[in-house]
Length: 476
Image 1 (cartoon, rainbow, N blue to C red):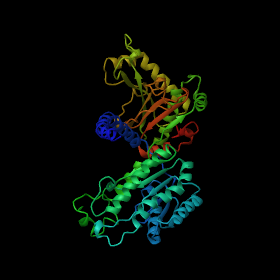
Image 2 (cartoon, rainbow, N blue to C red; image 1 turned 180 degrees about the vertical axis):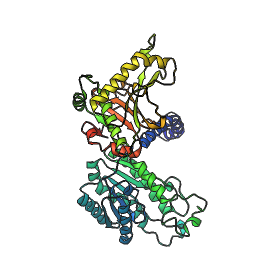
Image 3 (cartoon, one colour; image 1 turned 135 degrees about the vertical axis):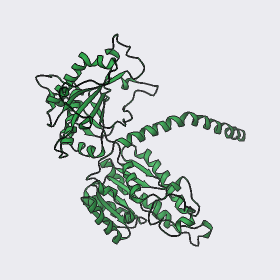
Image 4 (spheres, rainbow, N blue to C red; image 1 turned 30 degrees about the vertical axis):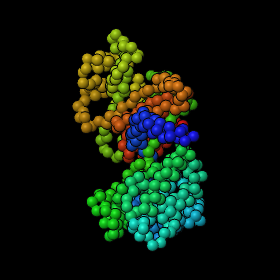
């Protein structure tokens, strides 16, 4: 037995290093792609219910985005001041619940009170924390105040909030610290509790799966009550470390939390949409034509709702596979970006109906087949639109939107030895004002990955005509 342990002590470290060399690159690539995805698609928190512990010394970034707030802290006077500011910033409803998170009965009370008042809970922000600056050996009294507040205070609230967050597909935001990874001397208890939080919520990510999202925030020095103490920076040798403002930190936290929206069109909804978009000119619009027309109409409505007297022209462009359109045709398996993009239509000041937009899409594709292909293949710089042939239009007077369909690609037939995929998606493009289409697993429904500015996305996600046919960010 001793010989086996000695052998394992030699073999396992070497085997671990070899495995890390193979596993870490794809792991970090997936993390990066997921970061890009989350950075583009943001959740609209307007009207959602957010409970924040340790809220008496924070700044309500959620309030600016129209969230309803439940503020928890021990100091009621400070809570009332923060609540008043949150209302000024735009929160439609704010309640304050004076509580001590280190007491389990208080944690149950503020969760119940929030649920009873608002009828739901969407985000739980575990922000409460305390710190003591001293060497471990200089501590005259070792108490459980640090773990009770920093660690157990987060656990208690999370435990009581889980049933409500499951119902709303909500999120938990944990304010840990960089010291959980990089300990700082004289903050031994604080370091330990933050490291414990990181480990705990990494575990809960696996247990909860996609039911509840978890965001672990590990900021550095933030301009808060803790760092404003005269002794804090000198005692921790942090005088030369940049201190982040609370406003910037809060915005980054909310931005990091509000991620992950997509629009799914089930086959039955697409059938109804195609029937609505049909006309004498285009009697049987395709899936892509009908969904594109709907999304384009919603986008134009956003542009026209701004109140500008002379709104910009809305120009829609489509990506097309040139392999089978080349002369002679290229192989379907030709490697490289053998695609082109051409404009398929323009919407001027009026908001057009679905049938009209489908006609524009169909006419644009037919015109491209007739003469636009040769324009692209001869490497000319642009393709003209009939609607603009006799007009002088500056580039600044147009809004460009781009869409590309990856439907009918056999992604769901791919099998690398683990079986066929249950869900296929792609990293979201960084291109503003773009739409990417993918098939559902049944091959009849579609997913649309839409990219636009945050302000436009807030309006887009609430468009009732869109929501009559699409579901926003459903579970896989």
